[in-house]
Length: 320
Ligand SMILES: Nc1ncnc2c1ncn2[C@@H]1O[C@H](COP(=O)(O)OP(=O)(O)O)[C@@H](O)[C@H]1O
Ligand SMILES: [Mg+2]
Image (cartoon, rainbow, N blue to C red; front, side, top):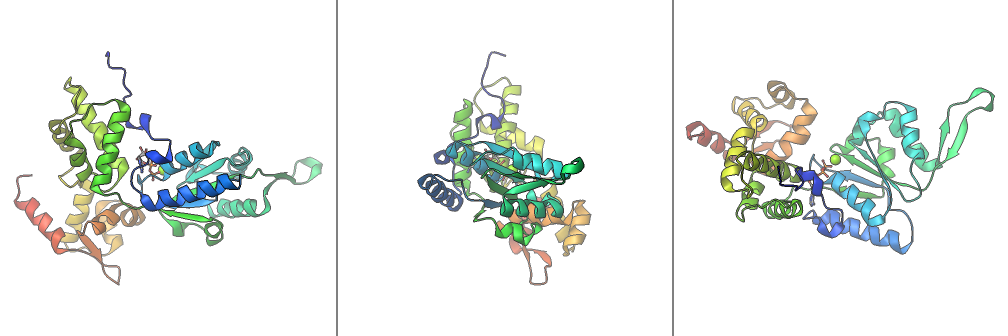
């Protein structure tokens, strides 16, 4: 192949705050926090990043590190499996570095406790070695970024130590279209003018899904030996991925079908579609609720809205 352009959407993620698209509230909070840190020549405030998967939490962590000009140390909560993992993470950070713990609700309660104690005491205590007794090592003045889809999976004292709370929202179609166009340009992938909004409409308010769809379109485009990504590539990519015209995939359709068949309790719906209840309530439902297809009543029962029922009827009668 003679085309030397990057082949992965993630090869061209933005690193400057000014290149982030949408997510105004978070961007404004981060702007003020960066300016305050610069004015006082100190670290970025400890922050909790809350929001569904693919909304830009890791992206913001990366941008903060780039804007601060400091190191970024990233781990997944579930990959901390012993005190040595946590200590290595904390001891590896220099002054003003950022430690980003992704999916921090998966961090064992024991380590969540160790983490806030370490923040308070600014040291870690290593187990005793021979006669010397436990060894206490001072920590550098790093800042901690905790990302989660489930803030209540965090111990309250740890949550309370986060000075900033950044809440990530779904993106509008216009924002996602701008994001797709921006990424296409950064990657040097020619994209037909009318395409970004069509991708955006199928991305469920989520940058990761928009970019994944761009990647899928590019795959089809290249497989067909072409260079400019067009509407035809999108149609074929969606057919391959099982995505409909509003971006619902097989799992969402199964979810809606379960409600149509009368299921209304979270646990029942979750077992019908074969996913953990928490994944259903934190990953599947938020977009369906926001787009007005389902609602939850005061007792926590799920039901289809008129719009949701209409969508299913249209599907049942339609050509798809
Ligand atoms: N506001 C934004 N502007 C530009 N690109 C974004 C934005 N938010 C997310 N992205 C891109 O979307 C993808 C998913 O974002 P990511 O930070 O991994 O989500 P999360 O960590 O919340 O699961 C990445 O490729 C990222 O570069
Ligand atoms: Mg992430």
